[in-house]
Amino acid sequence: MRLDSPPVRILFLMPLVSAGAVCCWGCGAAPVPFKPIADNKLLMQSVIDPNADVIWESVKTIITAQGTEEIRPRTEDEWTAVRNSAITLAESGNLLMMVPRAKDGDEWMKRAQELIDTSQAAIRAAEAKNADRLFTVGGDIYESCSHCHQRYMEAITNANK
Image (cartoon, rainbow, N blue to C red; front, side, top):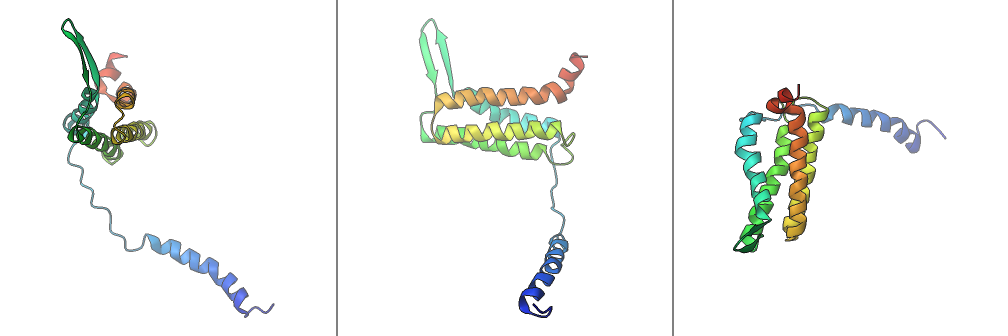
């Protein structure tokens, strides 16, 4: 086979073209204009806690002397509200991964991903209108929050020292 034959030229040029493409992927790209507004505490108070409460309050059983009351989303609007809160929680996990909110690149990211994963399970439960699954996933979300708080919430961290 001659060096100037088409197959040889293609084989010779492919690595050069690939290298050039890799180098140019980041060329000229403007930095993403993220502008975090809320710190972690405000994000928790204004976004995460209220939306977690929607999920936690959506399925429960209240037993009193007057009888038993089963709380469940029943209407399309109620299921949509729970789903929307689960979506907000999942996206909040992404917000927690952003600088300057991210505390570190290891455990913090794992805890934020856990919030995303458990919230995605809540989205699926709400979309399936499965109250029993939503109840269980609500517990998983609570555990996700607790894992992070045990490591990063200052009041809890200082209380254990």
